[in-house]
Structure formats: C-alpha cells, structure tokens
Image 1: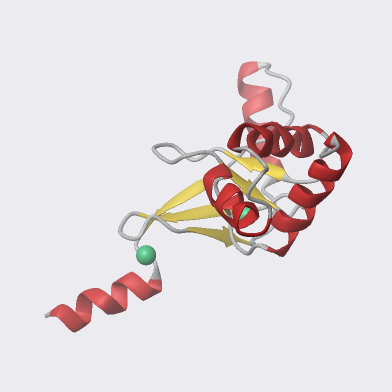
Image 2: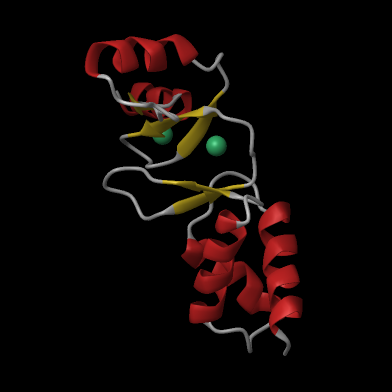
Length: 130
Ligand SMILES: [Zn+2]
Ligand SMILES: [Zn+2]
C-alpha cells in the first residue's frame, strides 16, 4: 500500500475516534479494517500527522502518549481512578506566560496544564459502593 494512502487512512481513522486515543488504540481501530497495516506504520504516521499539525500530541505523566484531534489550545484533566483524559475548555491563561517570562527571562511559547483528581463518573461509583 502506498505511503500517502496509509497516511490518509490513519488520519481518517483518528478523526472519527473520540477522546484522546493512544497509538495502540488507533492501531487497534485500524487493524479491524486494514489488518495489513503494521503498528510501526501507525506510530510513524501519527507522529507525522502531529508534525504536520493535523493532530496534537498530549503528553500526560504516567500515561502512554495520546493524540488529540481538537487542535485549539485547551487543557486536560486526568482521572486518577479510571485513568481517562478529559478536555478542559477554560480560557487559555496567557497571562501566566508573561508572569513567568518576566520573572525568569525565558521566552515562553506555550504551557500545558493537566488537572488531576476524580471524574464525576468515578465519584458516583464510589458513593454506590458505600
Ligand atoms: Zn474516572
Ligand atoms: Zn484534548
């Protein structure tokens, strides 16, 4: 299969997936329809899509690398119980870039925030067990 076709298939597949799939998730999804596409090809093309700014890479500590099809800048929440990653759509806090830049003289391009705690679903689950 030609490289551009594989790239297109991988792009189309991740665009249809919800949430923040890992490379493994994307591979599993592609494997259902295209069992001949290797894991290495999926990984390589996902990074190429990220390099081309078609998708975002989300780096979450203690979690495999994830990909995001929502491109505008946003924050994330990680549930400590189910491990799910949620989008946090609050206004981008551009002023903290200035604060850090002024304090340290770094030229700040960007920042990421990952909120951590327990998601509503897991909070409810906990109540039910009592
Ligand atoms: Zn949860
Ligand atoms: Zn996201």
